Amino acid sequence: MAELATIARPYAEALFQVAAKHDVKAWGQQLDALALVAQDAELRSFADNPKITSQQVFDVIAAAAKLPLADGVQNFLRAVIENGRLAALPAVVGQFHALANAAAGVADAHIYSAYPIEPAQLAEVVASLEKRFGRKLEAHVQLEPSLIGGIRVVVGDEVLDTSVKARLERMKVALTA
Image (cartoon, rainbow, N blue to C red; front, side):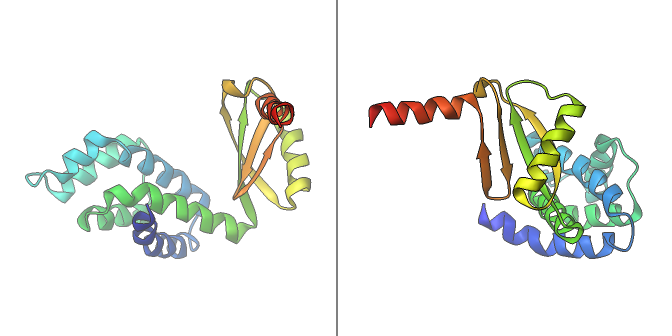
């Protein structure tokens, strides 16, 4: 998917430059909604239909996003649709968030847990992870019952795996070696 990343980069950089003059966080939320809609295969099939106009595609996506879109976000969406880059929209949004996080000195922390984490526990976990990784973290929690217990944290290309599943795998390797 290097091709999508290559296509997405100039869009994300231009979008971030414009968003920096407005409200980056609000734009990010609107873009997340658009990326979620753009991932739908039926919608992309609808958009690829030659009988459908760009305005019709825009109207469907804007309505499906269920958020009022800022003028700049609307212009961006129109440009993406008119240039036939709807499939690259999720990659653009991902790169936009990476640029926004880098500018704010924040990194995304994807926390995979076997069980739901209470907000108070999450705050403690994030505080200790920020010390461990040496930067401010934006936590995204996802349930993954296959971990059995504990958590697995992914920050960029770094992984901290304290799950029971990982411990069992290490024990298995040690016993079979």
